[in-house]
Image 1 (cartoon, rainbow, N blue to C red):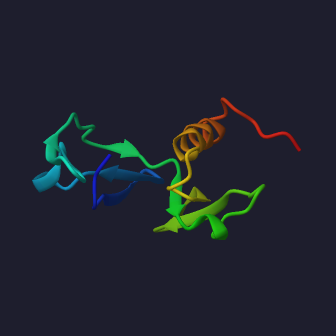
Image 2 (cartoon, rainbow, N blue to C red):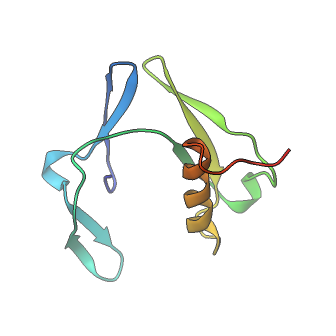
Length: 104
């Protein structure tokens, strides 16, 4: 996980995300400043969220695809200022990994 910038590489057919060395473990929090937090040095990118105004989201959307160097990653548009945004992220991640399914 990274704040502001993420370095991406393609490895073994997967997109791998990592924080830039100079800001790894740091998080800028509006009203608090820069704080030191734990850091995962690298992870497989499993979902791309486009943060958009609520007027640009669909009520019942389909996952799209974001492509990086020939690797397709599930993509979803999300309104970050809605009170339910964090729960939607949680559910979307669980849908991608197969723990939650949508009902047709």
